Length: 377
Image (cartoon, rainbow, N blue to C red; front, side, top):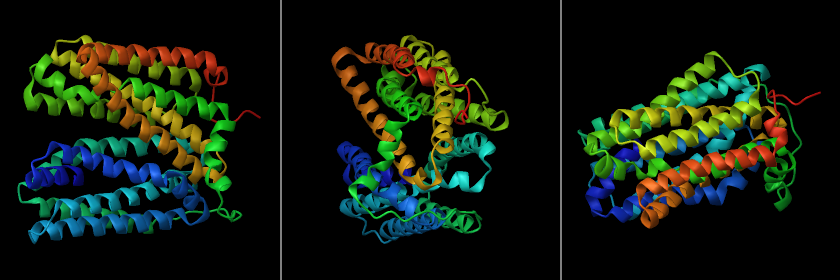
């Protein structure tokens, strides 16, 4: 909701498409710069308090944006500064939120809990932009104030969460402890294989970055069609995440992970060659569903196979893997489309994703043979 309002207001202020791209860069930079530090913070302090504090900061940012819009003194620099602060709060909150899940639910329920987390996120991706656009009819202040109220509500709900946190040793802050989350992932081949598989699969499979080209030039669907194409992956993702929450994955985990990535690549290929709007929507829905299966497996493995004292740092490193892959994947797709054309670029990405999955099956046989989330005795 906030993203839609910021984009509309900024474009109305400056009329610059470059500024819209800079919003993404302003959000991306704090995540990269703070990722390893925020993981250490999440392991040294009360994760629930971190979540509450971050929601308070986000609510304050939304109120500041509303004040600037209503008072008619909002500037380009002010928007960028506030969005950077919002992104920094989100960077602190993400690893704390992920690491908090095993403190709230029993170990056996982590996988379905992660599926519900993903389903909540997908619901927000579907409802949030539409609601933000509808509220913007009454001015940007209405959208900002509503977002601020929802951030405050989220913080209040976090206050009510009760956790049984184990007391852990407070390691001194050093380069070694900051990097220990990355070192832990590298030392666990199952975690390294699953996260690096996602990194390279998303790097090649960034077809959604080219949706405006497909909507206008290939499918002739116009702006309404573009909106439907953008929503299709989230709809597929929401549907499968609800299924996984009610019917959790049990086994075989490794083969299911590889098949989901290959289906993601195959759906990308179908979308690339499709000239039918209905088939394109279906391919994108399948793509979104396959991505969620992979996401739930990776998140569950990271939480179940990581000691509590390390979960913040491992979650932060995982966020760095996924965050950079999404950004670089969009860049790779745009560059390939500029050099080869949109259709060859999407086809290359889909085939590349399938090839990466096949190669990772050879490079990480432990992951290929993985049957269950828990460590073997």
